[in-house]
Structure formats: C-alpha cells, structure tokens
Length: 426
Image (tube, rainbow, N blue to C red):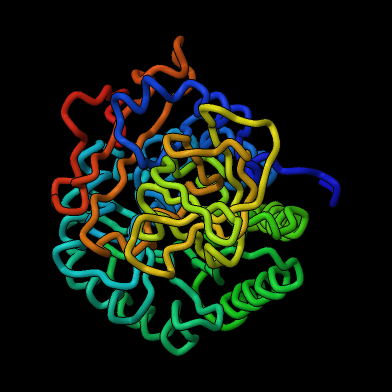
C-alpha cells in the first residue's frame, strides 16, 4: 500500500444511490419515506477489501453496535460478531447466528444477559472488569468451557489496569471452565490522525510486552480495533482516514506473525453502505435564500464526530424538474426546534421543490443509533436492507427485509408482515 492509494470502503457508491433515487417511485409507493437504506452488496465488498488490506492471516469481527440491522449480512463475510447488549444478542438468536460466531462484550452485563448467552452456547467473552470476571466464574460452571479476552485499558474509562488484570487472573485460578485466550484493545472511534493512531498502537505493544515479561500467561490472541473513521462531511480529507487505516493494517499484518489477530470494526464496514433517504415537504424563502424542510430531521439522523448544520454532509438528490445548476440553500428537519438543521449551507439544484427526494450519504453506521428518536414522539424511520443483485435491481422486491417504524415501541424487534425476507436476515 502507498499513501496515494484510495480505499473504496471510505466512499459511498455514487452510481448506486443515484440510480436508486432515479428509480425510487416503486420503492416509495411500498415503503414510506423517510427510511434508512443499507446496501448489502456494498457492505460485503467493504469487508472483503479491509480483509485483503490486513493480509490473509488477520481475522475480522463486526461490531454490531455500529448498525445491528445488517448483522446477518455481515456475518457471511466476518469471522464473528461483537455483541454488547441483550437486544443485539436477541437479534442474533432470532436470526440463528451460530453461537461460535458471537463474542459477548460490553460494559453492563446482567445475570439475565449472561445466562442467555451461556444457554445459547456462546463460548467467547470479553471481560472489562474484575466484577465481570467474578460473574463469569460464578455462572459458567455448567460443564462448558468459555474463552476469555481481557480488555486492557487504552487510557480511557474502559478496559482494565494492570492491577485489575491480576485480580481477574486470581479469580479464575484453578477454574477449568475458564480459559484466558488473550487481550482486547480498543482506543477510540472516528480516527483520522495517523500520529494518534500510531501512538495508540504503541500502547498496545507495551501491553503485549507487559504480559510477556510479567505475567505467567501466554497471550495467543489479540483483538483490537483502530477506530478508523469514514469521511462524513465535505470538509474532511479522505487521505487522512486512509493514512490512519494504512498504519493499522500494516501493524495488524506484522502482529499476525506472532499472534492470532482479530481486527474489530464497525464504521469502516457499514458507513459507506448506508443512506438516510427523505423528501422535501416545504420550501420557504427568507432574505432571498431558499430553506427546504424535510420529513424527519435530527431526531432521525446525526453523524457522530460532527454537528449537522455546522458541517455539510455528502448529499445526493432526485428532482422532478431540475434546472441543471446548483444554488446554495439550507436544509432543515420537521421538528419544532431551531436546532433541527440538517445542512445550514448546501448545494441543491435550483429547481428543487417539495416532493423531491434527498439522500444523506455515508450514513450506515451510528447515524440511526445516536439520534434522539423520541423527540416529539414522532414516527421513527424504517430500515431497509437492499440486495441489488436481484434481476430487477431497483424493484421493491429487492428489499430483502424491512424493520418498520414501530420497532422502537416493540420488544420483538420484528420484521413487518409482507416484507420479502431472504436468508432469514435482519
């Protein structure tokens, strides 16, 4: 790899979303706007590209917290899913994800959650504290061996100190049902600074030296994430993210010569495979400037790592009567709030009007998960997983499944009746 190399997983598929919007009529007749659109084919291509960059000896894990709706698609290309809550585990169980493809992680681990994981025969666990280790020792005595990764601190509130690591090892002494396999290290998220990334990788190296020199515990497996981000705003330089990723990929490849290495990520797989699709319902002119109002708003979409309204996201649109040239305008949501600004200054076609459709790009990771969805108790967006490998790729039947707007109010997290479901996916 070289610094000039472009990485496709940092870029959304422009031809796909433009064709999708151009052919959206049948889709919008069946699926009400606004909705999230997740392109399954792009997700799988992203995972393959990252795996190739890491080298053949590095395994890949998908962090479901980035986007749980595409977990059953991702599992076809990754080695396992990182699951951090009972809701995520329930999705895996309902969709028959093999227990050997699940790693239970997370800060809060109730007895009910752990019992459910053990009953499902999940065998791999990350431990974030001595309390979690004590809980695992207490509940795992069911004749099955469980395998543990110890999460080591990167300097944040997550992970364990050296003293806490020793406490964990003392707790599982002579416990045949517990086997420590290695360590987990995760420093942060949305990284695009190669110097900071290299500094964090050096910290992981120090941890590995510590285990080798001070602990009577051979580290066989290292799971780590570089937290590499994806450019969501037009002001961000793709080269910065690419340089940081190259540092992580080179380190993973070197590390795999001595350890079983798993690279864990969510955003770099899912972000460019997702779009938030909405429609303009009103146009106003203030001081000669166009202001467009969209269905939904900041209660539906927020980009982690940057403020909508201050920074401009990548947008694509479909117009009924385009004039062929852009003009500057503002794009707002439908909330009763001055802060509900999606793009304070962006370029839309001068012929933009109510009824036109706008897509927010690189929105496949976290955007839907960190939004204040209960504001005004408005209806939440649908979630469409789209398989554009079918014969009529822009028909409504290409939607392999849909999670309806009512999912927030239902513990079942079910697929709506009538949706075309393929392979039992989410």
